[in-house]
Length: 203
Image 1 (spheres, one colour):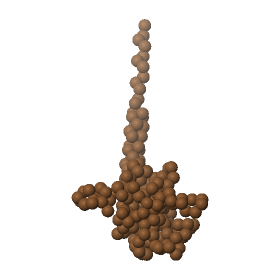
Image 2 (cartoon, rainbow, N blue to C red; image 1 turned 45 degrees about the vertical axis):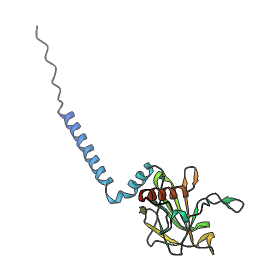
Image 3 (cartoon, rainbow, N blue to C red; image 1 turned 30 degrees about the vertical axis):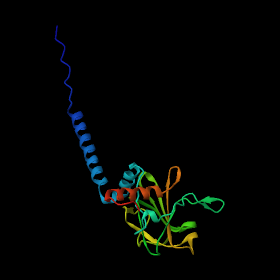
Image 4 (cartoon, rainbow, N blue to C red; image 1 turned 90 degrees about the horizontal axis):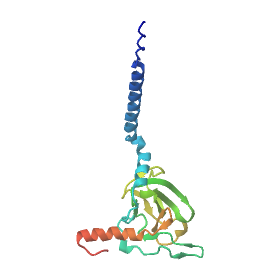
């Protein structure tokens, strides 16, 4: 009786070639994606992702050059007419004093409208929105989508909007998921830490 023929040998060559090709393609795509993500043209989405993952800051510098926290009155929540309350703090300074970003972030709006007059909105850490209003003017070239760091100039102190005719000042507000947040405790916390580190009384 004749012996049965041995089963045909499986040719794994095509499958191996397909696997190698797939690995090489995905490796090349991953390498390109990593390279592209770290290029300057991806700075905007990279920054948005990074700041959205950052915690809410517990300390902030005063966003008007040369003004100390002790000079900022606690007016958050004060009545403003019969239908609204003060949703920020007013930081008084001479007209033309630089207004500086308090955080790292992305400029979401540069506009002149409504009560705030000339204003800048910056999306900062934890996606909080920082509102700089009543500006006399904006920093030249500033526009939506610009990336800013703490201390970057956004504009200058003025009295535009419903502040027209009052002493020049910056209205500074912070808005989180739950609405307006009082900025003053954060401004004071930064000053207190700096004073403690320097061994000086808080200002």
